[in-house]
Length: 295
View 1 (cartoon, rainbow, N blue to C red):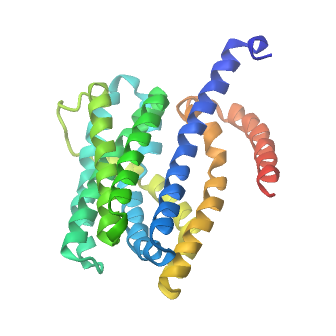
View 2 (view 1 turned 135 degrees about the vertical axis):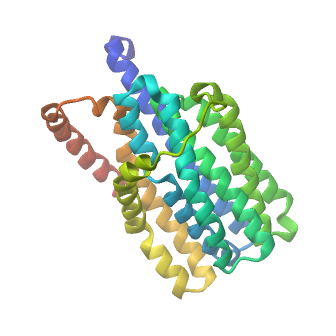
View 3 (view 1 turned 45 degrees about the vertical axis):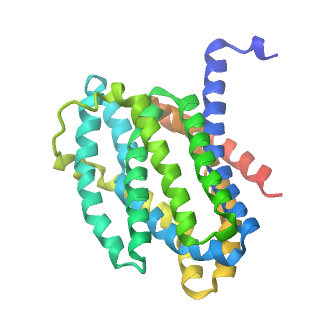
């Protein structure tokens, strides 16, 4: 049956499946790590860590500044300037890191925890910058094994510290895992963007990508504002349980992007009429996915 499918359609299905596997690995890793901490210690420790996690996650979202969505559009319009636009966008967004990094110091972090958070944040910022290249070139196999290596590092450190597991132990584990991913991605993809080439600050990149930031930030806050409220009013034990439970629902909502995200660069090149026609089958598929996940 598989061989009877047209090669073009078969390639599209394979791309969607690989991209879906890649994106399913991320929630599986996050949920797995939370359950691991709870299993080795208790819900209260994980709930305490969530207080750090949500602020760092928010900072990472802001540092993205619509990077992926904006650059996919720019790459589609100017394929000959991919390396130049990527470098300039990275350098322009680094201003955000210089501003947000010191702001973390005003959060209730100890000096050691602040240092770990800063390294974690910078590593995530660099890893996040490669996401658009991975999507544009469909390098999903590469990122799958890098995610697994990063997970092995994080989980391994948590397991080694299981006897005296504490906030700083978990922070160190996440920092090491994210730093390893950033290093591996940079080594694997550096030639694609000629990372040793010239960098220049482009204020227009920040201005043009700002609407994408607002869309992403509003979507994130819409799906996680309850977690921020729970973190502020409930004890750590309840926060830990709530975070694990709501993560499952959030990741189900993300299934819709698995189908379209690998082809965003192609969608940007379509006419309005073709996009309108495409929206109907996509809406129908979304309804089917909704019913399948309700049980």
